[in-house]
Amino acid sequence: MTITEQTASTFLVQRRQMRWFIGLVWHHRLHITLPAGGHQEPGETIGETAVREVREEAGVRCRLLPLPLPTRFPHRTIGTPWWIAEVPAGPDNHTDTLHVHCDHVFVAEPDGDYSGDAESEVQWFNADELAHADGISEDSRIQGLEILAILQQHADIAPTGLPVAGVPPQTGQE
Image 1: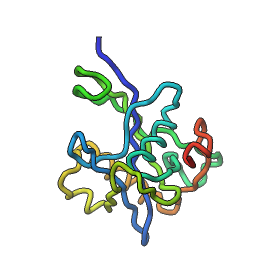
Image 2: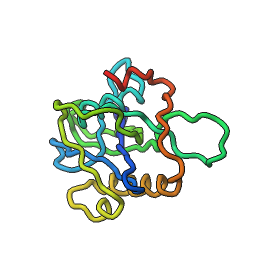
Image 3: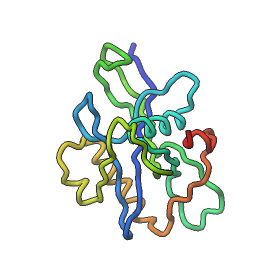
Image 4: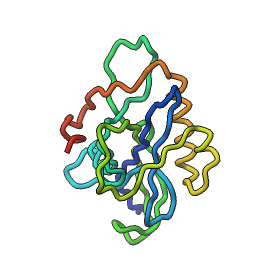
């Protein structure tokens, strides 16, 4: 029987000078650059996991963003995973054997100032830099480029900071 663990990964995004950027962090155990993320803790929703991991690893509060919909879509959207992927995982600090991470991939914008207690410094990449930078996990590069393409396609839809269902506003504010 395969062991499956719930995880969340969060790509930070921001728009500067009409260009979108992806924020990634250095993973100290894996020695690679990827989105902030980690295992779901007991009693936590997966959205809360995403917000917590960004706060711990990047040192900033964040606001989860919904997948962009057509401009004239008449209903409020909520921040949900953009993708859910089954990712093979080797032994780690949660499980000492091969297992699978059911990874919920979120996109979020920073919401506030960066603290001095982050595990890593956020590195920002535009699409060209992300496509060619060394040391980025290939699956993160693929996802990041797709996220940037989607956001650029919907450039007239700026992140709104709408409250996210299941994640009270104070969750990202602590």
